[in-house]
Image (tube, rainbow, N blue to C red):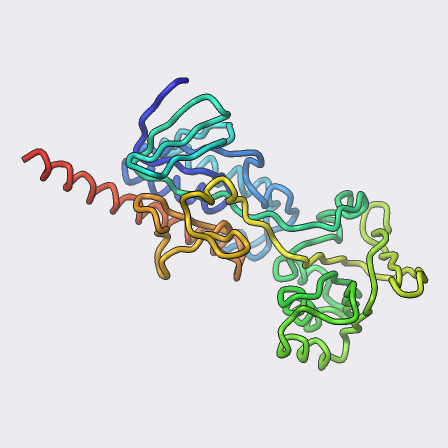
Length: 318
């Protein structure tokens, strides 16, 4: 098993990870970044990004991540392919295993592993992802101005996204599997008060229809078995997200959904020298620009931590 010692180890390569790398590299901390199973993160499966400042014409998600990577590399970030398969945060320096064989000791670890949207699991849903199918109304609702859309989900996120969409589109069909929503009363009331949201109770999605883009969604009434096609151009899935944090659960405090808890206003976790950024710790905003901002926080917090550690070690030697 090969061993290596680094100052800053960044796990994950979305906007949070690459921004942390840019700041850490410019501070002379020689960061090593492991890209994980989806280099570039969620944005690599996103088509048009129009809400990130600095791109007045918009940009494709994969190209945006290439730009982030080039900027991180320009300042000397060591970007590597590989999966983190185990961690040991019981002591310091922190120990991390890559691909089950190589061990790295890191003075500071920045977690930027992101979160993945939960999908229904339909072939047509994946085939039309980015071509009318989306898991983010705030990101993509603008593209469906004046059109008809459907949204799946029954929790607060689904209710919030349905309400958001209702202000942009002509009509929203909200597909709820049961005869009630899990959303809070106030969020349900907002949905029911919106004149252009139609809630279809006891309804499940059979298939998203369309060749090159979404042309409709086939739904089934779970009580009667009756099927029909809703003529929509957009299909939004809002059944939750799953943070990619399971590997850290033995050491890092998380909420019941697996989102990492940080000290408010910082990227600090319960383990000194381990910092969490991006969607791995953010269940509220989940935007590229907020992830990038938290990546900056992670790098600055890591830099301060390492500086304090160096002072401690010097004093211990005296």
